[in-house]
Image 1 (cartoon, rainbow, N blue to C red):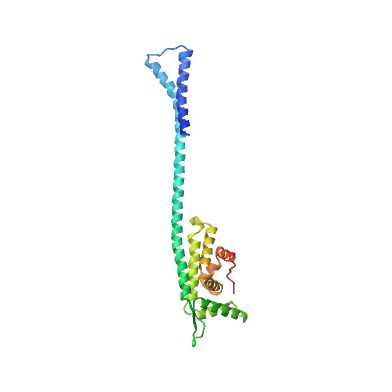
Image 2: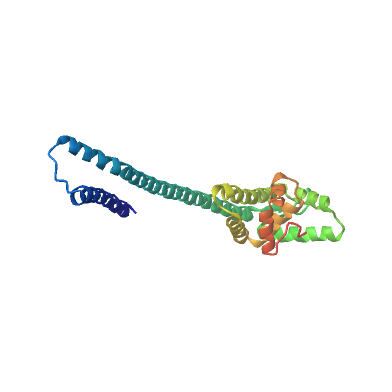
Length: 245
């Protein structure tokens, strides 16, 4: 584009000069004048014809230069935005997998009381989850409603281990929702892939206990996850729900 514009400028200069020579020297037979006034008139002619043409060409070059600068600025902005997104993903990954490690620690430390106050029976880990599931199924078979199951979970979770596990899982879900939001340049597929990773990286017995907590526990954490439609859709994609019991 620039080379073509420069060629057009040179051609305009050549054409203007050639037209003058052809008209006055070849057509009218004039000779080269020694009068300064004649040369002044030639300068007026030359400038009057070429100035608008060269000014127009200069404007074209200026516009082209501005377009190049604008394209460079857009590329720079895109690069900065991409760098911000990469840094955001890196920070998110560190926090996300720290929560995953925390979940594993909570499962290891899980302890519930399946006995009575006078005769406590402390059960830990995955065995505790299996026991709780059987007890909840028995309660349901005996006609217990949601409130009855909620009271049972509050009774056995005297150390708030189930509640703590539910809270930790909520932190992971909210981390995905907030850090990978549309406003930060992500979309629903990015979030759902991380929800799926969260579910798959959580022990299956533990995820069942968390879903039980979401279903029966009355707290902000369970309410938030029940209202997170993207998270619920991810659960359904792996045949899990928040109303298993």
